[in-house]
Figure 1: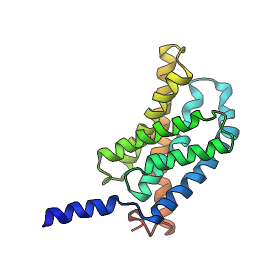
Figure 2: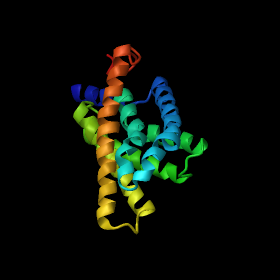
Figure 3: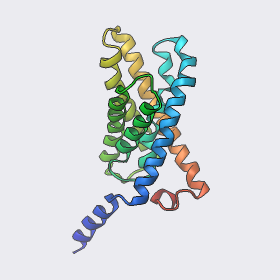
Figure 4: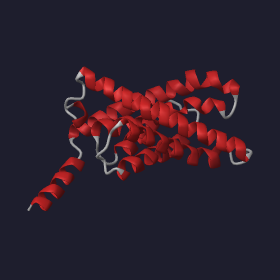
Length: 195
């Protein structure tokens, strides 16, 4: 009987509530606007430095893939948030066009794999950091063959390395700190993170 109860409890905790869907969607839309602004107003400042240095800030595009699962703690949160943010970014006129959707998918999947590996039960800073690096790995797996297939191997490794490190630092640790700050305000009381 207790084994059945444990399985039932796990199924219940994996079930998405309406509030989960709404909060992840709202977060994703907000991040989609941030993505567009980041591309239009911040990314351009580092563009003159050239590759790979501009990728030191690419972790901002990975934030929803870490922040949403840290709040909602449900399978699919990383993928859902990153895809909705990508759609909003495209609708606002992303410079990368529809490819932003594919990029969002692989970035969300990279973080999703990490949270899945710990079975959506560990949401500490180390897991957030690794999830950010996972999203950065997804970003690199997308960007290198799509945008940089003819670059020298050392430049490809530099770009990939900065995307992964930026994902770990900005999306991982930065996302964890953002959620921690939101929890202190009381805004997350409807979620396990807020209790």
